[in-house]
Length: 477
Ligand code: SAH
Ligand code: SF4
Ligand code: F3S
Image 1 (cartoon, helix red, strand yellow):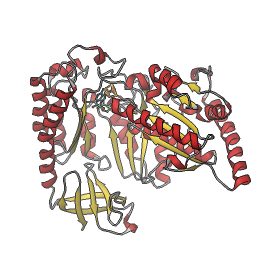
Image 2: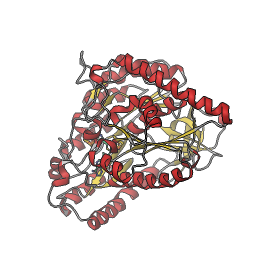
Image 3: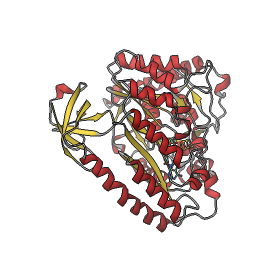
């Protein structure tokens, strides 16, 4: 592994300067290639996992465009491929390994093809070992804490004859000033904090993303103001546990205070946030959500499991009763709030009775939507070594039963929205049918409706005429 100066003793200015030099160096060679051949090199980023990774990819995208690359969605067309990986569940990793195999074949056709892999998977030493031994054709490996070194590392990899690897196992200071190439300008992600301190027993994220660090409110507000000036109307504030924002800052500021300040930025019409950990949610936040028109009436509140015994073993620090109380308080303040969740089925030691309690929570809360996952054993987490791992077949049987309870409830909730009028920010053509438009309600439901391209960016009133299973169809009124 290369021994770079750890970030804590390298100033942010010098990192940004070093990046500029490397970016210009690579751009000169990409431009020269274009002049000689008439062909502009292409780069492709494949992103796996959560919004944190999507947002990191936007930063990589900005750097690659500055280097003179044209971006492509197709790996087959690319001269440089970056996999930004996720390891939250085993199937996320399997997808990456499958695609690494595909690139091996592409490299046979184009020996100059450069392959870089980064993101959460690379923070696990056993993965880096596997790449060194089984996927030695990878040119560059870097970790989540090394993203800001990408230009220098890429330049090194372009000249090296073996895999260049830089993975720090601890985070450094928060780096401000990296450019971002946002995919959708109408809506944008803003990181408010990095890392996670919660160590839920099943979860790999605290090991791949390091300790919790909050960005300074001034930096966040400046970024939001810049985005607003460029036409962004909806902001998604990102953090693994936004409710603990600011605890590491001086002067101390809490998430509700930050949210209020973001809502004061001129031009910002809607604000969303995720994820809200139930253990840290405050009444102050719920009251602010209720009283502030710019904050969307949408709460993603992962329950994970319905049994207190399992919640305790998961290290979640709340009980089912406390969770239900938050839901009641949120709905008392905001009768129209949309509540969504994450649920894990088959955590080690989950009995039939524990699982029934998860079903019971689903029945009681009546969610707007839910992401459901089979428990996936992650090496290095405390839950991986627990006895009583639930057999795969049992996990599958339980999730099938869970969906039989959940889906009809979500369907009934969607049907109840018939004839309701929602305020919708028009985002653009629908993905599945470009002839119609799509937008989202404050509660986060997707709405499709006929309309004209000129409406994109407007907030309009849409009356629901045809509720569908997971989306709504309506007409502008
Ligand atoms: N910080 C967020 C979650 C980030 S990970 C929070 O605390 O809510 C997103 C979701 O992946 C989690 O909510 C959890 O439901 C799921 N997840 C995480 N680790 C998992 C594992 N080992 N197996 C299955 N699902 C997992
Ligand atoms: Fe993982 Fe828990 Fe942190 Fe969420 S809060 S990222 S589930 S450890
Ligand atoms: Fe996100 Fe996956 Fe990493 S969920 S934080 S990309 S492990």
